[in-house]
Length: 168
Ligand code: HEM
Image (cartoon, rainbow, N blue to C red; front, side, top):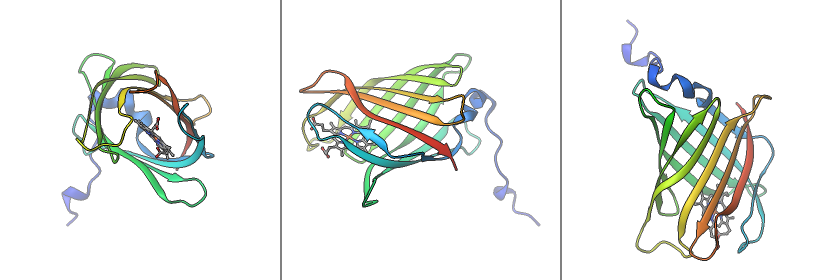
């Protein structure tokens, strides 16, 4: 007899507006990283968006050095939608010791998120991040695009990352 727990859970109906995110995405070509205080860099990244039938999407982002393939930045967390609205919240933990809540609106297949709360370990490296803004959008060509800006103790809000992904 088939094990009932092996069945794929149906997406919670409250998350249907975000169904375009689900699955695995691989960077198309290396993403570009920059910030006034660092040397520009290139990176690759894999994104996983999954669910288990709860009104929550689980995600894991893993970034690597584009040449050495060494693991670099990682983020994981949960995505929730406020029922009956287009309000979306990302609850995020980063391997650097940063945790944050980002919230914003879903317009068609574009998410515009702003950090609402940022906290870090007592021994996190400086400069400390003060604000993050992130745009995730599904482009007409089927690629996913992510742009992340940040403000730190020493720099105002400026772009840090830009990358596009192909569904794999
Ligand atoms: C929301 C996500 C991210 C935040 C908040 C963040 C934050 C930061 C901060 C605060 C710095 C130091 C800036 C300075 O010294 O003025 C930094 C540098 C850097 N970040 Fe990010 N970062 C994020 C995502 C990523 C990703 C996905 C990569 C991909 C590999 C990455 C790669 C780097 C690199 C290579 C540096 C320069 C070297 C270093 O300081 O380690 N970051 N990031």
